[in-house]
Amino acid sequence: MTQHVQQTVAASELPERGQLLAGGTFVTRYWLNGVERALILLPDELSGAWGEYGVEIKGAASYSDGEANTRAMAEAGSVIAVKALELGGFIPSCLEGQLLMAAKADGLVELREDRWHWLSSQSSANGAYLMFFDDGWLSSTDKTSERLVRPVRSLPIQ
Picture 1 (cartoon, rainbow, N blue to C red):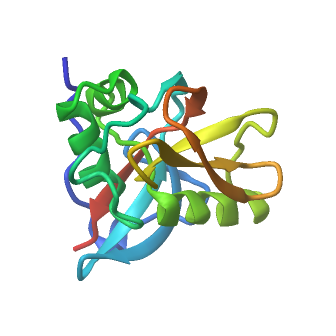
Picture 2: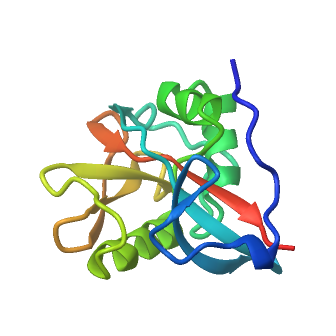
Picture 3: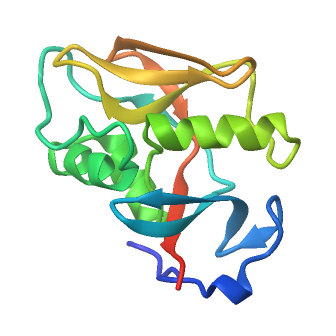
């Protein structure tokens, strides 16, 4: 069952970075598809494979739009994508993963440093991007590998 979540946030209601907002931690403001948005790191942690090796998922290759990638993944049967959407969030894209790393480096959020985390950006039919939050290393690997996911939420700022 999908949770009911806040759909927008007024600029005047934004807390300081690192503070609580919409069920998670406010990471930063950013622009996506011409809309200013608030990126929020959810407290949940998921684990699983990204998808099937050799299967390209149409609509899951955006470097910046994690929500669109995650929806495409879920439609193709990705268990971790479905779980992230059920939480009212999505798997961060490469861009959103880098914004999370910047917030971690600034001491605003905590992210596990002992395992790689999936990002929703597909690199090929065989692989997808992942990030190591110890040092911000971005790479790609076989989609069938089990990795962590820290879902995020992104709200338009009004």
